[in-house]
Amino acid sequence: MLTVCKVTLGLVALLLLSSVKADEEPVLSVGEILERANRGIVRGADEPTVVGDIAVGDANGRNADPCTSTSCKWPKSSDGLVYVPYHIANHFNARELQVIQRGLDSFAAVSCIRFVPRYNERDFLSIESQNGCYSWVGRLGYSQTVSLDRSGCIYHNTVQHELLHALGFNHEQTRSDRDNHIRVVWENIIDDMKYNFDKIATLNQGTLYDYDSVMQYHRTAFSKNGKPTMEPIPYIGRKDMNETHF
Image 1 (cartoon, rainbow, N blue to C red):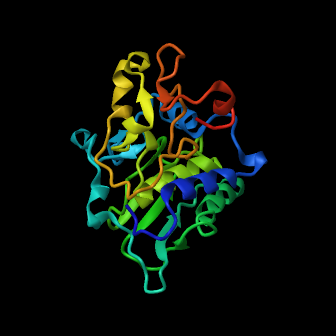
Image 2: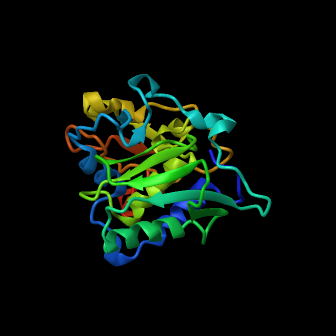
């Protein structure tokens, strides 16, 4: 995960979600957008193995969390800020670039993270339109792809979601402590999608579980029958559920 900067994941993700402008907010949740954009994708020979929307390099890395080690951290500068260099490929149009830039800039208002255009830094994010929406988790080293497919990934919260992966954050429902906060309804999940709910040995550092996070998939994610695949603990009544994005 990235170096701690006084702002927890829950606060960052919640504030980022609330910053979305109405004219950029999609009808679907970020989880639904990712499911739709990545469904049936055939990736190129030069692309990594992708599990859900996380690049893992090979299929054996499915349950790996490289960000339990210090090697994946984006370093903190002497001024207390974390600078993450990026390069945006030249195949996005003006509207798409505006959405991507807003996503990059939104972190500065609520955290010590600063996404900055790459000059000559060795390690940087290469934001491209590859096949689907995906990112590596944490700092990989050298150029690492953040894929924002032009055909379905260019939304404010989707950009934030993939950038949070690049900063070292996993999906909320895969947290090591998730069983204290949600109940996974395994019988409602599509069989070959159950890996999306495998727990990871994450370092949560005391951050609260955030049902409203852009990293939390919607409660019917990967459902085979339209019924919930996740339920909050303790159960949140229908009135309260309607006030959240989960």
